[in-house]
Image (cartoon, rainbow, N blue to C red; front, side, top):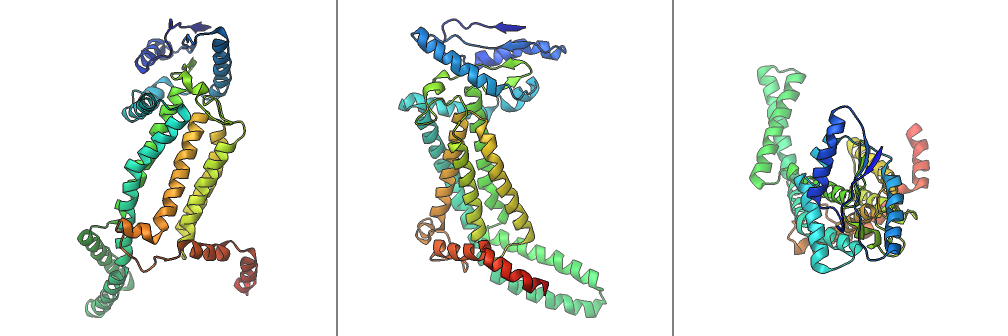
Length: 367
């Protein structure tokens, strides 16, 4: 049974009304029943033609949205506007849209740039400071390593340690010495992860806020309404309707390719990589490919946000590579820093991605 819940002449449901209605009908789910309930709102847009267009757009978006179902408890605990970060992200979007009067595509872009500039850019600069100080400690760490090896060799003779005991004592004391150095210079490598610990929750909160605003969740038979119907006409160019997926795949491709470019830039900045880093890079490469079909199934408002966020991150990485920018934000000079980063990246790329180089090295490895 499909029941309609009229909302009078309201332009859209408020988040409080939406959550109250979901809680009201969740009693069926808790009693073991799964009713097919569509929460909808009647929008007085001024003309029957506009109402008909909105109904057609909502029907098309509902067809895409009904491919996944989640439980009521999962939605309320992790994905609803009742979750503080998600509700805060939605509030920020609505406030920016109301105060600026910009269309929704510009509101999403402006909010993305503003949040990334205020939150992730300072943390990225701080992360670069930490990494630079760690790199500058390498000569001192190498010196301590040589001295410790000499002391361990003397202890082996004096106390008759075996190889296992000597390796254990060396590793334990070396970790202690490195930890003391990091504390002394306030540059523990874990501090460089603050930017990711901020960026990932921000990305998730903004994505879920936009998904709630366009009603793209289905909760065990309860299809949520579109909280912000203006998204249906708030796009531009080929994605004029932000409630529907981008049928041209342009936004998903921009997202995937930009993310892949960030990965490859970070990979090319390291002349030598460990096996773990190579495996991690391959995982992110696969993720950049997977992002394309995933973004293609999401409403355009989400894929537009993803594209804006990833392109901003790509531009940020490019600027942070420039020596002039690094000096402007007082990042210490490191022995590995290049004065011509892009030229050096091209040289490394020719070596890493050259098929001729690989084919010529294979016979040598076999020999």
